[in-house]
Figure 1 (cartoon, helix red, strand yellow):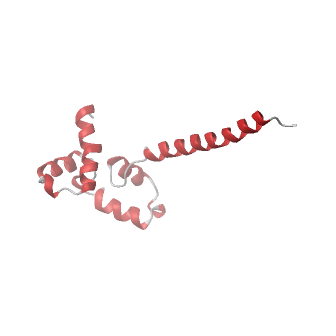
Figure 2 (spheres, helix red, strand yellow):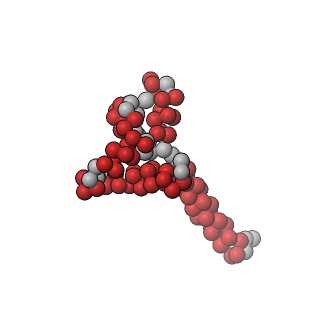
Figure 3 (cartoon, one colour):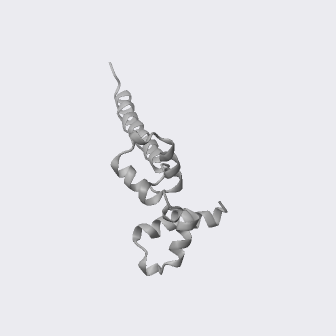
Length: 108
């Protein structure tokens, strides 16, 4: 016969395990390179082009062919710095903070 404390322990372990698994998946997903970034361009160029999706090909063409359009590249950061901040999109602000500011602080 099961004791009430045994049932309670089993019921609390399952949600905790699920929470840990979900957190791990989010951490791994958070480490993935942003489409159009230098790391993403490098990773995609190593893959067989026949495995690319249409969206990947479009993003590659837009951001990876010319360095000045590769999100986070030195040229991209410089071009954005020369653009009036009032003309930046919300995404450009976030990307600049993530890629350009971190480079300056870490010296990468």
